Length: 343
Image (cartoon, rainbow, N blue to C red):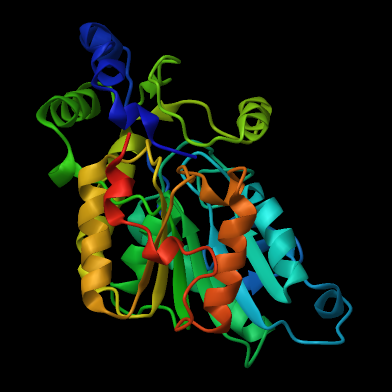
């Protein structure tokens, strides 16, 4: 869902007095990278099965005529969820896209949702490999239909890393919803030092962000309450997973100026999960490229698609897919960029 623990030096530092004792207790690093290829990748109705046999649970939202096999979708969206979240994050948006003739497929990324070994970080190369597999399978499922990548928060960071690395997946464009662009290079000394010390002493320590951080990820309170009750949403983070996430976000920040495929980049003026400085840098680099559309929503928060005004964001995405040269109906592409730094 969101990396709040990294915004709280207190949350990272509070347990360091216990670190030595915990380290003696055998708290070790754990990762789950992709294994050797043992099978051809498969897309079925419930999962994407990667080459190493790992199942990525799949959710899909199809236009009725596409579901019935009578028509092709206007476009296909491959959607990647945020940190500690899972594919159900796109339920509301996916239904709305289906109403506009667009098919949306979202899978649980490794270590999240209903996958095996939840909470253990898979590594950036594995996340990218799974993304490439998903794109290849869906291009095969829907030949001749334009495919777009949509990533929310951490999912946006995965998309950025994949699209600026070798053998980028062949997609028509990307939609980056509050992409997580924030690595060690943009962190203050205290959280950076606390993360380093925690990782080296107690990488398996699970951090639960304090309730009084004052970070508001959305104005949709009922949705946030539902997430707090959802057993598939991870509530705490291993230190080694936070370290892996930080590396991914750092790679995403450096990737912004190299993104070649036309993209729609969306942030909320009330972004509180990500700090303003790297967000501002990212927006400036996207706009300098001249091939991307950057939109800032005056009433938006981090979880733009699920905010109370999420429908406005969905309509803008549909409009951009139809014609990326047409100004967005909401006017968010003409909002002053300094709003993204407002708190």
